[in-house]
Structure formats: structure tokens, C-alpha cells
Length: 440
Image (cartoon, rainbow, N blue to C red; front, side, top):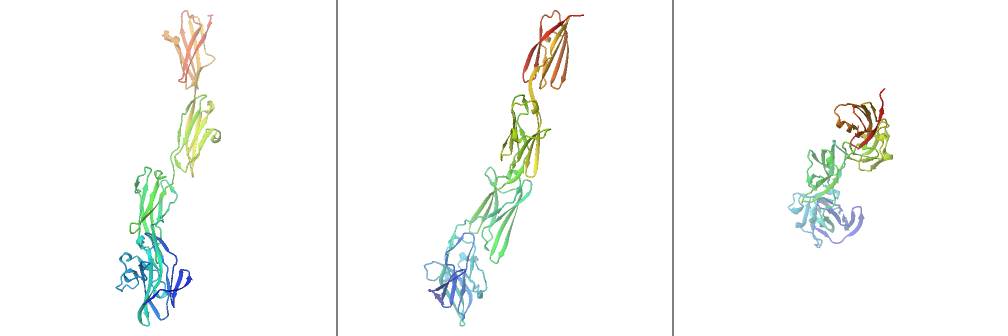
């Protein structure tokens, strides 16, 4: 058996070559770093004297202070028939990248890494020399450092639209051929409560990339809803040895609710019209106010658009009759346009018009009171409270009321008759002048 404590060195793509005579091994000079739950590849190649026929490779892990690892330190032996067993902690976790020893490739992959796998690794090659069983152990070693996992899963989220099926993809970190990890999905709603997404289906697959590398993928399929917008979904990976890593992503769901118009639609003349159009959506809708029938865009003149809120307020000062009528709120969301209509009515104080007055001819008194307003005013005659016999005629035209009262009076000595008009916005009283006419 050969143990080579001294070496000549040369450089190769895999690291530093160390030789004793015609026996050389190439190992990484740098410390190999890896993460728990994943895997590490130890690149290795060797050459030997022509009279030595390699048959098996043996890998050890032992304290760096030991001059040479012992049989109890074996972590891998390519001879399955040997009674020299690997450490139980490494059983089934170590494999060669190349099974044909004649290729002089001694590289191994260690899967399902634990932090306790950190340490010094040494190589031995066994075979025949001059028809005798022999082997050589290289003193040159490679150091592996295993830390806690920092890599996170890769979560791919497509465009989410309310009412449509969506599939999220989670890919476990690492391209290892060890134990298949457990992948779970959880959802955290607006209230912060974690739960599993209802009405969903999950799928899992493993892609074999090369002989010793695999990719583990889980998919989550569900119907998107507005309630899921701005909630979070977490993909959690659990490796052998209770090593876990997770990635949390925020869901952005394209959705739009119905358009809502708020504000007082019945406005007094001279006051302020203030209407707000809003629509809950993502992304925020672009809102435009228009007036029928002119279809004029009121956006720049007298609207206050709250950017990125999906809300626009229409403000008109000193309202007049021309501001009454139908208004349209149009909300543009992605490739969809939603509309809502509102009718604005103008109210004004009642006003008794010119042309109102009374005529007294003999004992017959006729009074006319003409009043305009919106809402339509009502007219009362205080004079009638003392009379039971009279004729009252009321006519309406647009926003004008004409009230005519006729009655017989004896010795009417008043020079005026009071007319009272009220439409809820205010009351107006006017004493109508009595014009006396003498009979023919």
C-alpha cells in the first residue's frame, strides 16, 4: 500500500495536481462551500503508473490533523462486495460521477448535506500492481464547508386576472440527486392568518438534467380573485434533516369592480356641485367625466383626478341651470371601459313673478299669483282662511305655477292681498296690489 506524504504540483482546470512519481491526483485547492440540504461535488481526477490497474475508489472523511484516515472514516467505497462499510451517516448519500474507474475520474457528489459534513476528505484508489492487490492513498485532501441554507426557492408568477385559472411554479434550489424535498404552498390573507389556498390543485415533478443532477418543481393552480390581490403566497421547501427554506411573493391580481358615483345630485343654484366617481381596481383605472349631450371631456377644466387611486372628483362652482343634466363617468381599465350615469338637478328659491296682482270689480275679487322655482313651488292665499266660498284654479308650465283665486267680498277695504310661495328651498311672500275697476 502506498501513502504519498510529499507531492510535486501542477495546475489543471479542476485544481492543483499533486504527484509522487507517476501517481498524481488533481483536487481543488480552495475550500468547497455548500449549503445544508443541498449537495456538493468534489471534482477529482488521478493518473497512475502503467503497471497499476485501478479497480475501485475509496473516500474518507476524518480530522485534518490525522496523517491518514482509517477504515472507520470511510464514507464511500465503490466495491459493493467489500466488508469495509461506509459510515452510517453517509450511507446512500455519496455517489460517483463516473462509474468506470479506468476513466481516472474520482469525482463524487454528496447529497442531503448536513453542517456536520464539514471537514477534510481524502482519496484512496485500490487495484492490482504486478498481479497483487494494492492501492495508494493521497495525502492531499480537499476541505468542504457546509453552512446553513441561504438559497431560496424560485417562484414564478404569471399575470393574474380575476376569474381566470393561474398556475404558480416553485423550483427548489440546487440541482441535486438526493432525497426528493417536500414542497408546500401556504397563503396569508389580509388579516395575516396563514392557511392553505382553497379550490386549488398542486402538482410535483422531478426533471433529470444529467446523471447526477435533478430539478424539483411544484405547481399551484387556482382561480384568481380580487380578494387575493396584495395577499402573499409562500413556497416552503423541506429537505432531509429538517432543513427548510422558503420564498414569499405578493400576488397582484388584475380586477375591476363596478363604477360608483357619490355626492349630492340635487344642487341649489349658486352652490357647488361636487361628485366623485370611483372604481376599485388593479391596476388603477383612468377616469374621465363627460356631460350629455355635448359629450365634452370635463377632465382638465373642473375635475380633480386622484392619480393611482381610481377616483376623480368633479367640482363646479356657482352652479347655474346649464350645469343640470346627465353626466357620465367613464373608467378605462386595461382593455375594458366601464360607465356610470348620474342626473344632476338644479334647485332654486321660489320667486313670485311680475304679472301677479288682483282686480276688484264690484264685489268680485280675482287674484293671480305666478311663482317660479325648482322643485315646483306651492302657492297659498292667507285671505282664504276667512272664506269658504271661492274658486281656485292652478296651472303648471315647466317650473312655473299660476294660481288664480276668485271670490265675492263685501266692502273689501284692503289695498293688497298676500300671496305665499314655498318650494322647500325657501318661502317668499308678496302683497299683491288690488286694482279697483268700476262696473259698466
